[in-house]
Amino acid sequence: MGELLGSIAFTLIVIAVIAGVWAWISTLLRRGLMALVGFDRICVQQFETLLLYRNGRFEKALGAGLHRIRAGGRQITRIDLRPEVFKFSQGAVSADRFALNLVYVVRTQIVDPRASFESTQNYRNEVCMRLQSVVKAMCSRIPRLEIQMDHQTFGNSVQKAASQVFRSIGCECLTFELMQVDIVGLAVELDTRRMGAAAQGSVGVVGERGSIAAM
Image (tube, rainbow, N blue to C red; front, side, top):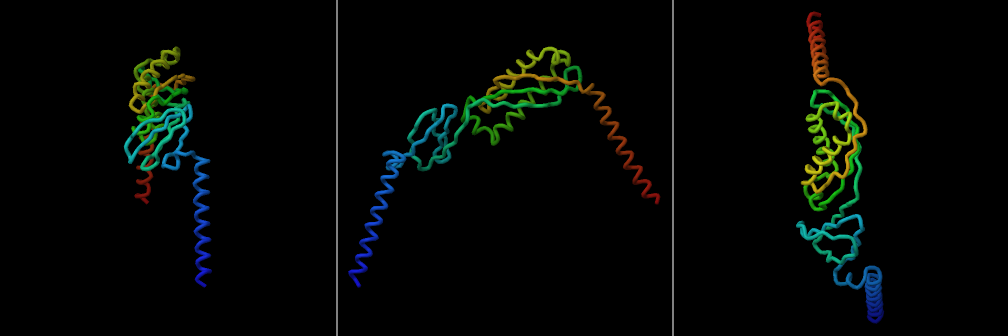
């Protein structure tokens, strides 16, 4: 009985050794010799940057190519550096108080991967919000006719202003193209209409309450 148990134990040991050797050889073939001493092989594409953090702190940025890094205690974030295109339809008010509806296309690109990752929780939402604020502020300084007649000058002004605003989030405005400008009306007239509609609504509610009370 003892010999049988010893034979079984020896067989299990042999199987474990063979499995270990096979795992070692498989890792060596798939990931290279450095993987056996705790290094991972990471490939960074031409259009991206890899941010490396160690125990929550920034360590370094890796450019395109094949890199070997020790995996323990490190976090990796890939940042896509390819330009992005955004299309907007936005309302604004010109310097001479005309309400406008603008349709424009913007091309942006990340120029500081670390800033784009660390400065905001949602990079794209931040770009959209800041860009629309810039367009609104720029429209408030320029008369309606200039915006309509000279798209190029308006676009260049917005592009420069947007690039300055984007700098803190590691981004740059590459192009700004104003596609269409529609006049909605005078902003003062629109405000008056809104106030009149709100007043009529309030009077209607009061009248209904009075009728109910009389009943």
